[in-house]
Length: 296
Image 1 (cartoon, helix red, strand yellow):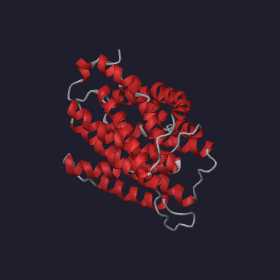
Image 2: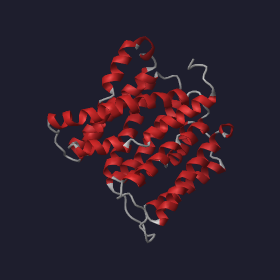
Image 3: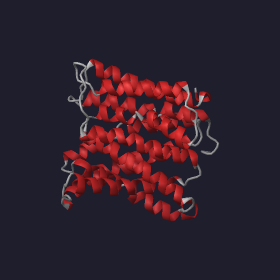
């Protein structure tokens, strides 16, 4: 049934699944409200799906314990990327973190040219120029003067670099086990965020009672909402052209921006910053449509 799904079905699944990730910030903020803050909230949130993924990988080890080198490398890059992105969501504003992550077209273009021997076309150069211009406007104050990156902004910016590396590895070595790759991704995210909490922010391990208070929110949101949507994204991505995948996954950015604007009174931006946001999204469209014209 699922193996014979049409492109239209896969496209709908991908668009809806990516949209769920646009609400990734909601459970993270809810976990903070019950006392688990900073990168500890991200570490715990990424630990909960392992209660489901690890037993599944063990049960399906005949199919999942193959191409482990590729699964581990993809999990390493995407796990660090996910950690930095989620940390950006809790340490910066949702809108800024999301848009800084979506500067990925710049990094994916550079990685593609250097590692995958892709051509540096005029469209990709335009995507880089647009992305950098949008970044400058996004980080400007309401008067148009430049404002420095805070630590959350920096994490969100770097998250796109690592996610781009993971995406490039997936493109170069597509025969990777999905569940095992997801397991490594969450393990890396758990370890990396714990490292940030302990050694960068010097935040002590929270008491067990705090983890208990956060468990219901974290487990339900991560294991029953975001984990299935992640599997759906992998499933659909293997069936569609890369360009179409990139366009459809923009639903994440749109949902994140709209939900944060409506639900978080502090998420305000000036006119120039909104212009920068639009330019960044435009750069994403230019980059993904240039990669594969058959996707449009």
